[in-house]
Image 1 (cartoon, one colour):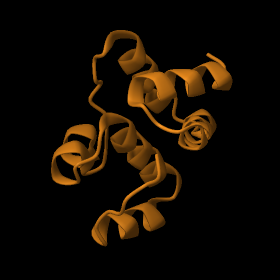
Image 2: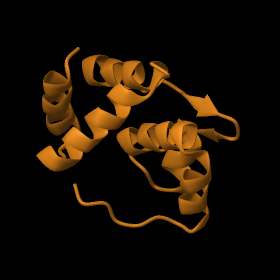
Image 3: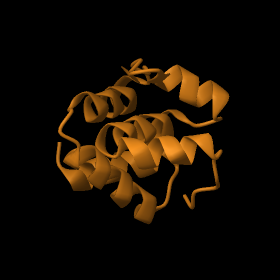
Image 4: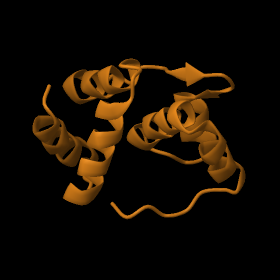
Amino acid sequence: MNEVYLQEQLIKHFHISEKFAKSASDRLSNCPNCSYINAIYEYVKSGKKKYIEIDDYNTDYLQKDFNMDYLNAVLMLVWIETDRETALLALSSGYDDIEV
């Protein structure tokens, strides 16, 4: 799936801004682990959330304990995989509002 289509689907299904959709699409597309982008495609297509985990972090935990929606939980896992130290530092300091 190309990035423009992915951005359109993110806007449609997650009700986010074009700017955030582009950023999310870039992060998903540039991650070497395809399981993240595949999980988002599956969610957009069927509405089913695929459980994903990396070490002690997973989509369910991030959604429940950090009040993230599914997209942000997946993006956090991407961040943990691609820049672990920074991502975990951000998680340990709490969460902030992200412009959507």
